[in-house]
Image (cartoon, rainbow, N blue to C red):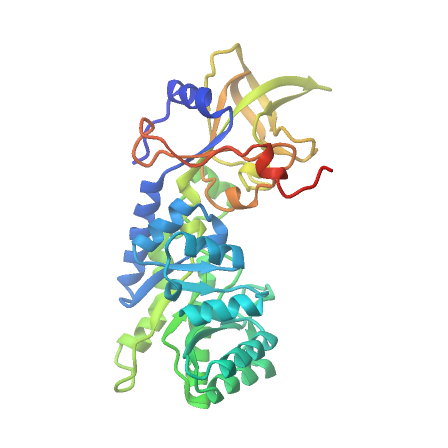
Length: 417
């Protein structure tokens, strides 16, 4: 359970760390991880989680995933380096993404990691690497693209009915030291009704590569795209009530469980490991953004408050986030239809629209569900980034997991001469 936040506790933190900062609940992250894993294991026992680094690559979280036995799902060389710096073994790293350098592909493959092939050009590069190292067995996956009925044409992976998919399968079947570790898919929409289509589609691909090319993957990866826990106010803003971890598990894993645990499995056929790549589902509700009201003004009949933080800190464009207001000790009034703006010089920088309630200069705003894409996508526009404080074991035991950035952090790569 999250510790109760009070004005006094916020005042103490603000005096030490400044008027804007993130609160991270690492204990909640651990709890979410256990719950999500248990929900899928109840349907498909041979299951594991590959945490999406791009959603929130705070090293504290990446280390927790590794400690709990999960995989690191990375999409860049930088994220691969984060994983290695966190002590993740190469064989627990899965590299997705449409652009990868040949040098880093070779480095990860030689170390025992898995590279999910995203294009025919990439497959040919990997074949060249394999030819140079005939004594090594390389673990690769194939990103698959098929219709799940979501009316979005994903730009990632191979059209599994297309010519390039056949060519990459032929490369895998004909290159003795390339091992098909995984078939992977990922689709943008998070609604649970599209997850049975993922499962049916990837299962059809599994049967195709097994029967036509004689290659059988060790695992099936359904990708990410799951709504995590959220308050009712946020689900109303989204216009969608998430089904919870159990709902996604039933929708995504049931058909695969029937195929591999329901008596249809051929004799001696290995049960593939099932993976998903959650990010928001694990970390979305584990971070809060704290900021303060700097000033309040009336412009042509419209009340506008300006905060010391920005909309870019919360990554919820177009949505009013779950918001709590704490008395900062100044003069307060009751307002109706007020907009709360950020500190930047961008006209569209609003943290909250149409606020109604008490507010005053110096008040604290605590914005919940800020763990997804906030820290990783916040640009250093006008001001350096704010600190991240872990309060997972209580606000009297704060751990600084990211300090506040300074001038030198931003400008050490520039030349002033």
